[in-house]
Image 1 (cartoon, rainbow, N blue to C red):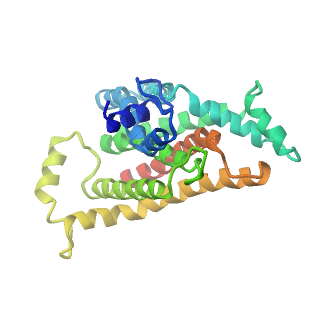
Image 2 (cartoon, rainbow, N blue to C red):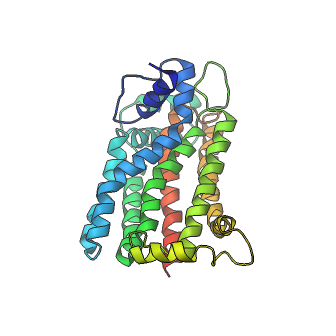
Image 3 (cartoon, rainbow, N blue to C red):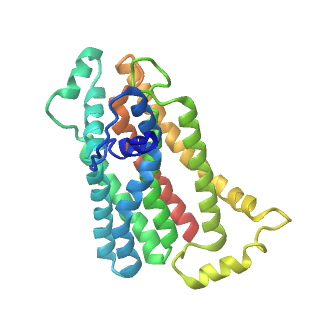
Length: 295
């Protein structure tokens, strides 16, 4: 089997329900599979968004169905990842809870039975935010904003997950600095372009009239001789700083808590906690942007 195909299959089977014939056993294959996790996040977002988007586009007048669609998306997103992120988030919360506890005892909590009250709070907050996002977007026909949100949430979560792995340390799962910077900059650039499109042409992506106006007026709206592509990106740049700040605060929180209570940087078993909290932060920012774009 070609090496690139092994890497793709290993990346898909990394922390997802679809266990392929190739698993990231050796360190080189593991590092390559880890580097592709943001792309896997996009795939997970697309898979989880299909049914909720269908409901939002065809039954947007039914508010109760928007609540149902929110629950479907949240369940599918966690189910596709085998609920590993929630389990790791729960373990991380139990390890960091309390004060004046030796680091060794905190590490032992990871394998002990029990659960943290933070986990149901996280699920409830995600469910509430998703419902509000559906209400702000689907009911107003802003389907493109909803689609961008549903697909991007696990994408940002998987980018944050990379920061739980050290950069280039020997005998340890690692994600290089170049990989982290590449995905971060790519995510911010793509988001700036998409949000620029939304701000310029509106969010009803499934409206033929909107697409027709977009195609006919693309060159006229750039203004001042600025190339349209640059103009669109510049419109969305102001919004991307919110995502950058939210993601930075998420990573900084886990780094700070681990350094203070575990006397080390977060090890890979904090990856799920970083992913879950980054997804929550992304939902908050998308909700704020949805209000800003519509009203």
